[in-house]
Image 1 (cartoon, rainbow, N blue to C red):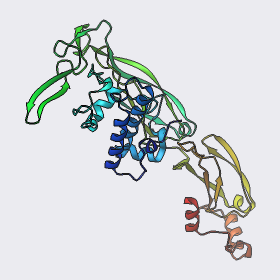
Image 2 (cartoon, rainbow, N blue to C red):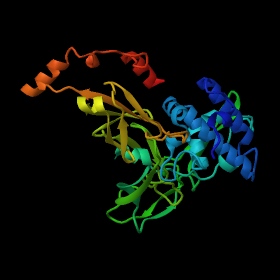
Image 3 (cartoon, rainbow, N blue to C red):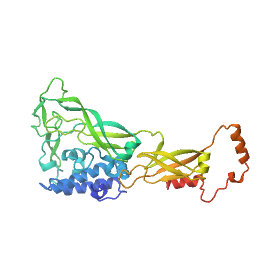
Image 4 (cartoon, one colour):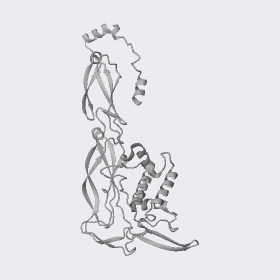
Length: 374
């Protein structure tokens, strides 16, 4: 099981952005590869801290994590965790945080300390996936067709003559503080260290072609409308032999149900019964996200009564429990009556059995609403 991001950085949920950044910098310096050469455990902790910082430093991602935990970013075996962040991603995204770390006075050099070739990452793709309430309740595996850029067959690359394959251009300047060395991505190769040698005619300037591919997306039960999942490596490929593919970002869109309304993990169902059924009692078959169930309506049931079917709602995204299905009983009053029916109700108008006599157990509308949300 993945560790809590707040625990990894050693901060609490109320930590400010500055406190989170400071905690991450401390962890990054402690476990940086330059300081811990050939130490796999330190490298994993370095990646773990970067993963935690990537989520907690972004207000939107942090809010989703606080609400849904790690499940908010996982799909199809991807996600932000499990070591999916590589070193080049970390240095390209958060390199400014490492500056002044005390490693030779010039900040960190990059993974392994060699300033070596930079791995270029392809661009991300974004799609929307519509889910029914039943699919959300049970979890589902969706297969979608995605048009993504891949390296064209027959494309070959050669070492960039500008940076000699390092992916970086180093400049040394004399300043009042002494000789200062700076490194920036090579503009000739985009930081990949390679340029195209040969490519087919149908490939673009980067040696890529568009290909349609079927991608399988595992969607956990309990997702909500607007949640974004990530399938690692299913975005556009990057040019060059050392490039890594971008990611496929999947936005969840919840479809409306014909008879059920969702409220968090709970579901609501409006059940209409006739006056005779409410008076005499009956049983009714209702629809749930896991199939139909039969419930009993007691004799003398009042309109507005709420029946709670525990565990018949939506599973919590973090796997804590299932929500409930709340059945709202509504006694249907006919709008038109024939002569015989009218005569019957005229006779019953002053009958003692038909006089309203609410008991203490018959809660008011506001009490029912309060119970529903408690």
